[in-house]
Image (cartoon, rainbow, N blue to C red):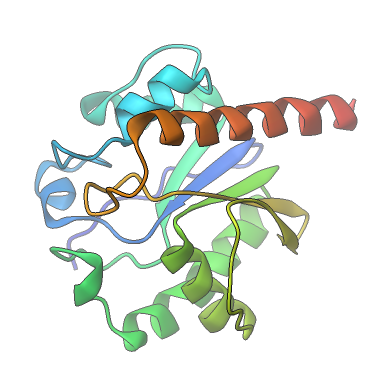
Length: 180
């Protein structure tokens, strides 16, 4: 299967977990490559990165202590093309990766991704999920939820997305200070 590589390594502060790669992202070999996706604009404005990055420089995100992966590695045109079998196959694999690399924070993009992770990797269901810091940990990693930056998730403005990445930035700073 043609998909995006994980950008993961030991010692990361944050691992950003998307739902799954878009067909466009796999075609060009880079994360968040759909032109209308707001991820790079939002994260660059948030101060989470020390320098601006974009689709073509996505691999440099590791230099900022941040990794990228997906709950499902099978690319699709949209989230509605994912099946329960995809989550059953991939969510436990994601859990193993996160437990292996033990980032300080695991940040899920969107309630759909997090809800399906909970169901298929943790065996938990929940009626409602709030954005922000979650009560569950994955190993020693804290879990944080931001809105999905996909253009299909137009309910959240670019400014709102920036605000959530700023919350993530602040949590990262606090947790790193607590480790000292």
